[in-house]
Amino acid sequence: MLSRAACTKVETERREVHTDGTKFKASINLRHVDQDGL
Image (tube, one colour):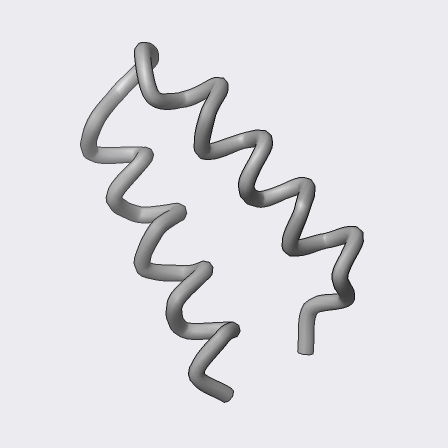
């Protein structure tokens, strides 16, 4: 469902959040895998 650009944006957000909060990082990770599996 996500376009390549959107996937790249998620990757960038994940990197930025890495130092911000592990819980949010895990949430983004799950969402990314979810979209990948579809």
